[in-house]
Image (cartoon, rainbow, N blue to C red; front, side):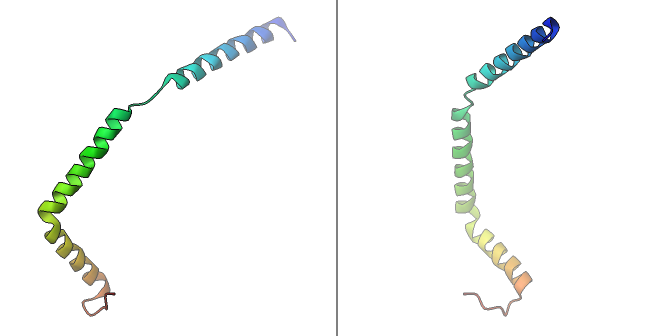
Length: 74
């Protein structure tokens, strides 16, 4: 092996090690995701409580439009 090839290999290895250590330090934003999940659940619950009957009617109307009003629902 030639000397420049060994130096290039060492530089490349150092950069790979540095990148791997940066990836290993990343823990993520768990509290943020928990907050987003809780807020989404609260929104769904609120919308369901306020407009549940209207949403049910809208869904049944859409299903009847596709299957026809005479279709048997089990």
